[in-house]
Image (spheres, rainbow, N blue to C red):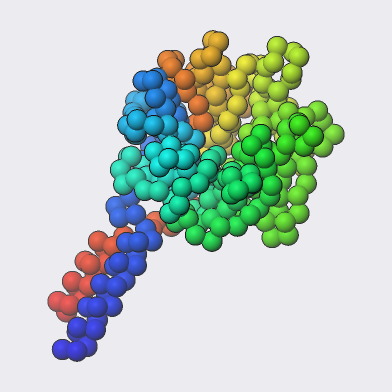
Amino acid sequence: MKVTRFFVLCCVSLIFVFASAYPIDARAPKTEKIVFSSKRRGNWDIYVMNPDGSNQVRLTKNPLIDVSPVWSPTGEQILFVSGQGGAMDLYVMDANGSRLRKVFGDARHRIEPAWSPDGERIVFHAQLPRWSIQTATIHGKDVRLVASADPRGGNPSWSPDGKEIAYVDNINDTRRIRIVTLDSGEVRTFLPNKSTWMYTPAWSPDGEKLAFTWYKWGVGDKGGLFVANRDGTSLKQIGKARPGASSPAWSPAGDKIVYTEEAIERNWQIVIIDINSRKKKELTDRGLNITPSWFDPAFVTLPVAPQPHLLTTVWGKMKAD
């Protein structure tokens, strides 16, 4: 009897441990989805849509700002920035918009989040108290300073191998992309011999390239979308320069990029472009739409998280035996 009671207590304890570590019944989309921010209804909310622009669905209905959504590597969760706690801070929710929770226990200014490739940690731009690039667990623990980056910098992106983070630094009142190696803390400048004003770096799925925005001030103030190898070679522009071009995100297959572009004055839309053919398509057509992130279940390589309800089933079978 004592053995049975002890076994039950152990199983119940395990259930609570897994329940706190993993979202119960969190389900990834079964098809490709792009998550983005939109102000089409007068307030910034999080939406999802198909890669062809169809089936646009609003996930958040918070009266305050919800922006900068990014898919978790498994597609089960969406990390984003919200002003609902009194400061622009990080929140996470399931892929369908349910089970919203705050990442950190305090209210600080944390923006521009991205996931680590294993889904265990996140990187973000924070004012704590000085602006910097920091990492933490998805539960807001083990916060680590990665690099300094003032308010005019930021845009961190975690490399697919987990070893480096690309971000924007403000150097002598200009913007340059920097890459920090996490193990050593060594920082190098991406394309150091090129002109400045580079923004929003995004690693390709294979980690061999960076996509980014490069502004050409004085030439119509247009932002060009560029791609280069991680060592700066094979630099090329993707499509024509347009005002407001920013926030590129790769397709998981690595053959397309989705990004923000100013369609008409002060009207930002989500655009998708094929890297090889340069053919592009506008996916949204009303309001302001920014910061897309692309998920495809066909490219998920991480194992599925344990589910507490399955543990109770196993215990029931063992007890019956």
